[in-house]
Image 1: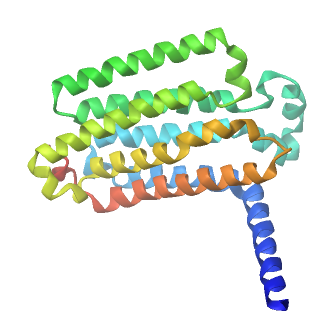
Image 2 (image 1 turned 90 degrees about the vertical axis):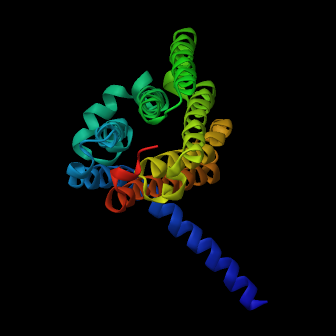
Length: 257
């Protein structure tokens, strides 16, 4: 009985420690790992400068800087010298930081990945399909924002997240189909494009369903807040560290389909 109580107390303490750690370090870890991937890509830029991967390295710097900028809500709460800015945005639409993540990640990242896969997919029809669905995605996303502008500032927009996920999944599936039809299937694990496709496929597949529960993302439900933080932090660690690993181990000569 005492052992059971001890284990329950230990579980509670571990959870408190984890939640405290996440609340204090989430922004640093989440942003830092993106800069790590961008930095490693830059170190190995010469290896990939003649391939399409150079665009991906540029994109990683865009993501790292975007995440840093989009974390302004955490910075104004953390640093005393930014208190005037905190007071300035208090009660305005910019008090929450949903809008930069929606515009520059949920839309911007999807557009980049569509562009990237259109360059590495061989099948002309599949390229055209990805291009058309991306155009529809951008137009419908902009239309949604114009009709319901408040959603841009107050929540992650399910329509955009789901439609963007469809674009990503379709693009990666087309790429995987190309691999299966070519001799590259024998050396796919040496291709950085395969790593990129596999990693973002998994990332979008895991994180997209979270948008259905965004209604619970508030101070009134800290259990969900910490669960969401854990999902995104661990998936971001997985994604960016996998990219860094791929820059180090992969060779562009294996990217040809």
